[in-house]
Image (cartoon, rainbow, N blue to C red; front, top):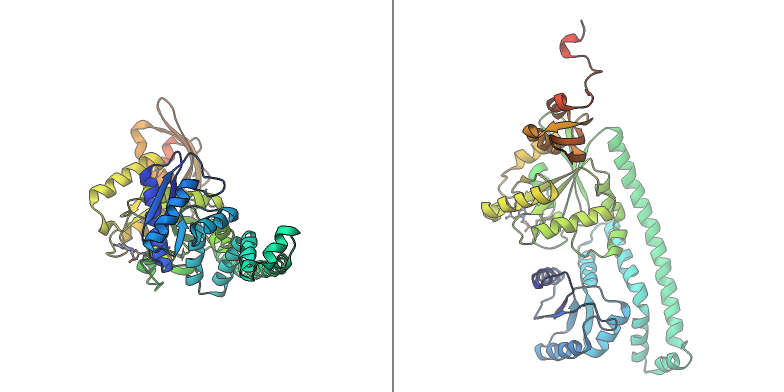
Length: 435
Ligand SMILES: Nc1nc2c(ncn2[C@@H]2O[C@H](COP(=O)(O)OP(=O)(O)OP(=O)(O)O)[C@@H](O)[C@H]2O)c(=O)[nH]1
Ligand SMILES: [Mg+2]
């Protein structure tokens, strides 16, 4: 049984979409959803998240349909979880624990496993008390009585031991992860020294990041119609048709309400993207929630300090959706985000040449910092600046657009007439050279 709460500012459709996603998460985790319950509230109930009356109703439905667990779509406090378990009489979980469970199932590398365990233990630590009382109750009530009287019965002592053990384990995991991070750092520095440019595939889980890496570079990363199929990062070379080779990285996907502990545990993996020269933000253009997913990904990117990296939206799966829907989506992100997405299909190969072309433009050998004023009649040049680099500042006045941007050489040449300073002033013209 899954439970969602509609708080002010969220529509019934928002809650439904989020519960659909929770259903997909549970499916990936190997559980089956039998029914859902939604309540509208001004704020979550402090003790039980949903209202008291709704809890009774929930308990009845759970018994009637024979559900053996209740999963809340939002994070519960340890106390709420405990109270709900007592009143519903079944296991009560939240979205975070489901995501942690999937990560635990999918982790294969040592580093991935350590990251997941760290996230799990961080989640568990504040919840130990609840488990402690449950255990002491099983022990026959002796300990529970002790807690009732002095608050420090045998159960509590055991709890302290467990707590210390877990904290020691957390410290060890942090140390281990630190050393993995150092190896990663060394490799990244090597690439930097060799001036290899990096494009990182980022995006919502299941958007098709691994499929794109495979299609672009002939890699054979596992692709699955499951959430969080990829946890371990993969790095592959991609030749650009101007003779350059860059590397493309594939990494763990994002999701709305990504547990904070996970982001923290996966920092070193995610940092891969904070160092990239270009973020390829892959979007499942066939997904009804594509726009919300774009915003969720941008939120996580901000959180890990990659919010300001140059990024390129890549609309994938266009074979799976009608053209009018994609076009409407493209227009919306153009207007709302000022983005200029590339349309591709990792399955049919459509648009992959455009994508490589765009990558080539967005990863210029040399970047030129330009500032200037472009008349409204030449807005094509403003669009060019967006496509070929990153626009740092943009403003509008009566006659045109003022902008500051980092662009490649071709774009800088095109913009030359409208710039405050000529970026090529110091460079001799070809015909002046070697005179
Ligand atoms: N129709 C269609 N399906 C695609 C395309 N690209 C990927 N898929 C499917 O989408 C699902 C997810 O693909 P993945 O490549 O595993 O996606 P991912 O972004 O790496 O997912 P995670 O690693 O789980 O975050 C798979 O079932 C793919 O077959 C595409 O261009 N068209
Ligand atoms: Mg993947």
